Image 1: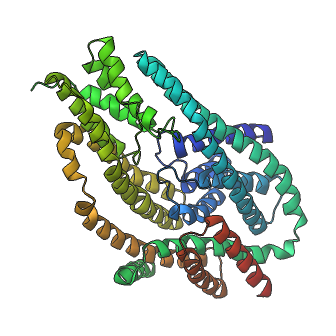
Image 2 (image 1 turned 90 degrees about the horizontal axis):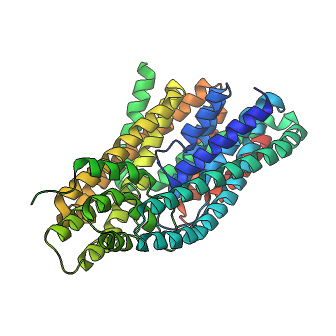
Length: 231
Length: 251
């Protein structure tokens, strides 16, 4: 598959990630564990896709999409990071740990930017709602359906454009940056990879673990340990 | 009372409910989405254009809820609209008032159940499975999460349609508290299993004892970092990366 075809597939899939995150379905195909793994499977590196998904799934669970709260769009950020890691690992950069860490940092920036765009899109959706008011006053159910679909198409296209632009920009930037970091640092960046996995788990512990529940944590750990030792 | 609304109408509302957030707006939040979802009921109940206009107008108002739990409001409102026509209510204001009253419990229960409990639980189980069986863990996550998600969407519409006003009794935050306590205990156990799985996963990926000890240390550091609720996730990421690379260079 050439780079152009890969770019088109990633952009189209990015639209679905944005759509599932905010506008429709919400069946969680946009979650990093699923979306990153899917990118890996499509581009022939399921292991790397899965690794990115595991690293990026947990840290954002603490941020809840409650009411009208604004936060970064972690799903888009993780998707762009995983796509870049998989494509760059094949085309340009060979040092795995450096590549994974710099794409994740880039993904954080993309997620933050995408969160701002989603917030502004939700403000501009007010205009669609005013048009729907007019349709309701006319008793036109077809127009209300079309306007709701317009909002969804808008969400899909916004996601597609964000992913397309951030992918091109990231490809150009990170292929140079990744190549300019000495291979000597790869081992040190490997520690960052472990640190990111620990961040997700530490974040979950801070969400759920209390003194009252610490024995449940111990039970889970002991059962898992026993299972690992037996099998 | 003979039901005018048919099961097929409720099923159409269920399918439309997947798009309730289609045009989420700052001003009305799920208002347009709610109106879009309830159109099959409007088509079934309204016999004149005037009735249709009033019906649509009522449901274009502000509405917000956790998106899956909005099904409970959709089903109950379908019932009330049906009753209003059958019993020829002179004033339909109670429908709007009831819809407003549902916003808080649906948001509170939905957020606690799905965003705060079920998603972390399904994620942790999905990750443990991924560490053992590879990419099928992603499928386990999807299956587990959507089992409850789709069940609640479906149950919400049909159950609240049968109960009407009475659905509010089932949506008590106090009444559901014990389930959340139980879920939190299960999640705590799964986190324990996740820590152990991560250690074995690192070991199977060729990491040595020094790196595994580093992982445990960083879990503790991350716990300290994320304990403060107001800190952005991005900040935690950057801090962890800087600390890890620095330690990696020193070691």
